[in-house]
Length: 436
Image (cartoon, rainbow, N blue to C red; front, side):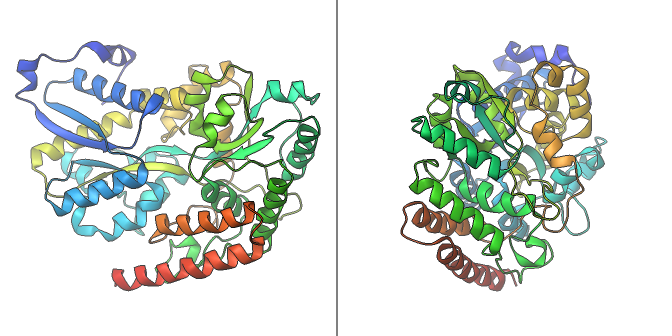
């Protein structure tokens, strides 16, 4: 099924209350607020207006971790939604909960709606498939980290706003100039584990963990305390002590600092585009994530963040038919192209990327294709196709704790990463035992 521009314009054309009462209801639990929450509401409204058999009810359930926990609790109580948004670090947890999910490939085969899994971008699709290549959940909001630049802040400091920032060495030199000029926040970051360790490793084609970062088996061990990772964290720690790197929090607290104009450089998700475009009162640009010079194979490719949509077990055939129709709608070229253009998330299908280019969006908005190129320029390797670990959310919490010790000057990078690896491996062993 294809959804044309005329369908997209139906956002206000909801069916009447009388007709809605006869429709099959589909519950969709998600983690979005603000501009992203508004975009999801628009998608749901457009789908509901496009047909009269089903009505999707979207509900915000908190941040990513809270939404996952809400879904697990609801399943145990027999009150689970049809569709649950789960962030990428919860993938292994959902894969292990086989009785709680209905794999997307089974849903689509039963629906018979002509769903084409091969139409999805390989580096996105591969994260959410099993060892047989069958899709377990539907990629939805897939992003990758980039470098956001406040061009006006660079100009004010006497720095060419078009200066090359491809490498961390070049970034360091610009931070020196910004700090020398009295800038209070030369650099900040969001999602420090995802960007500064997970993507750092993939981008330099070195392992974050053994067993192909967990894809090849449960008996994986963490490996992010190698020379390059230590060097990178040590450098950031020194920049923190020098006032060139300002730590603002574990999630995306730094987004407000960048959007307000306080910070000059910001490593964040490509999906920061929606908020930055809406709020920034300065000239901004998006650049590729920096890499370290002299590392063989770098830059490789970054890996995805974001979330996918899991279908929960325990629903009726009619509810599953409506769920399949909604997931097909979300992955249609027109809907995906608009989502990509509005938010900065990757176009998860090849057709959506091609449509975006045909519509002239990249030409009119230079830099918005950076994330796509960064993800697709090279074929992913076992070190760069993603990370799939049990208890990954808890492991990230451990990493956050240890990195905070470095930023505060209480730990060396080597000691912090060694400790994070040791503590994280204990969780992996527990997960391995529970999954057997």
